[in-house]
Structure formats: structure tokens, C-alpha cells
Length: 377
Image 1 (tube, one colour):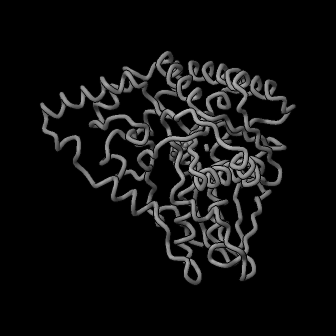
Image 2 (image 1 turned 135 degrees about the horizontal axis):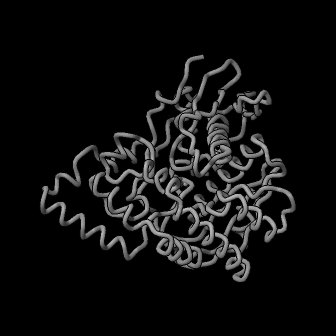
């Protein structure tokens, strides 16, 4: 969910295949001219402008609050949210036109994404000097209300990490994190109705990895899953900037290509064995796994799980710790239940799974313009 946004998705092609992709890119460049691969708006400039702080001198404008909310993690970078200014604050509504029916059939990741956005919005509201409270609409519409309260609220230091947060989908360096940092991560993730489990024991990590690999093989063998994933991939800077959404392949260290060629090679190289190999390598290079478990399996608690994860991610960012989602075993219901049994969480649903550790930053994802996600009151 909640993937650098899939904010909720690791990279999609193995290292050995990246060399083949790069070679294919050179061949195309020789045949059609290098401008074909590099044409279009400057992705790095767009990302630098997007991932920056707005002035918090005085009150933030509504559009500025929405800006921070949209920098939250979300599955496939689908950005399934709409924002409305209300007399008491901001109403966040699910945009089901941007749902992921194959990988997220019950909209769990969608509502976790709303929780991520709500947490960023609350942090921005406090940075502007006002308290904030969250409420979930019990009517079934699935809306989240963030209300601005009294003036004089204390700024949360997690706010400063919002423009630097990303899901870093590469190999990590294997270094452990310290006890003090682990305690800060646990503290930051405390949200009513949610629990964070940190797994660093190598035996338990391997047990979880086995389920990750099983789910990965099932998904990579499913034509519907592969087609949905491919529809959200952006194979070059021009496509990423034009859409403002989706998974820009450079964020996973994959060479950029014309869309037609990238789509063709993705179909050729996205295979179960290669995906299993990549996930195994990346998990084993990480410091540990983080598991988010809500008390109840309903939309309100999915939102809370998203909030807990977002706070974890921001605290990790502030500490120089990277993370990336590994939600594959949560997206296959029978394997999700096996994972729950392994972790001893009873009848609770495992909401989110990710790895964390140390690595260099990767390129940034983009977002749609704020005006495109604001609806009139």
C-alpha cells in the first residue's frame, strides 16, 4: 500500500535482466536516435519541485495541505483519493476509479493509502499551528474527516521528513539498526487500534520470506495480475511526467525505454523465478521486517494501519533508514492467513509488511497536480 510508491511495490525486474534491458535500449537508440529515449519533460526537475516544503509561515492554504497529503505512500502510485474543503477541515474520499481490482480486490490497500494521506494532512495542519483530529465516516462511504482544531498546536518533527520519504526498492547494505532507532520507530508507529511487529531474528525472517516467495510466484504466474501491474508501469520520463502517477521504472533502477519496447520486454522478463530471486536477495540484504497489524479487519482500521505505517516511514526517513513494501503474501488471502498464524496474531488481519535497512536514495515518483484531486464543496 501502502509503494516509493507501488509505493506498495518493490522493483519488478531482476538484476541480470536489467543488463539485457539496457542493451535493448542502446539498440533502439542507435536505430531511432537517442532523443526517443530522453524526450519529454525533465522528470528530475518535476520531482524536485514536487518533493519540497511549502512555506508554513502563518496558515497553510488548503492547496498546500492537500499537497502534503498527496506525498503519502499509496499502492501502485494510483493516488486513489479526493479532497474537499469543509467548514471544519478536510474531507478525504476514496476514488474507486483508481482502485486495483486484481491485487487489491477488497480495497484494503486503498483505505490504507487514505490513512497515509490523512496522517500527512494532520502533520501539515499541526505544522501550520492548529491541532488536528481524525474521524472515519461510519455511513459506508469510506470517507475520512480531518478536522482542524485550536490554534497553538505543537509541530511534530515527523512533518519535516515528508519531502524526503520514499520506498527505496533496491538492495540494502545489510547493516543492522541500533536499539535507540528501533525504539523510536516503535514509538512513532503508535496509533490507536494498531500494533507494529519488528522481525530481525534470521530464522523468523526466513520463515516469512518463504511465504513472500510463494505469493510472489503465484502473482507473477497470474495473467490478470501481470496485466494490471503493467498498466501502471511508466517506462520513461515522458510517460511518468505526462501521467503524474504510476510506477516509474527508474525508481527501481531499471533502464528507461520507449513505452512499446518497455511493455514488450516486461512481458518477456517478468517471470516467477526471477521475481523470487530478487525478493530473496533484497530481504536478506535488509536489517529486518516490519509488520503492521490492526485490531479489527474493517475499513476504519485499515485507515489506522495506513496512519501507523506512514508515521513509521517518516521516522525511518528522519533516521536515515530506508524501507520498501513486501505486501505480496498479504494480497493472497490463504497465504495471508498462514502469515498471521506464523506471527501469532490470532484472528487479526496482517495489514502491511515491509523491509527496512540502509541504502542510497533512488529516483522519486511523481503525483498528479493538486487541482486534479480537489473537489468542490
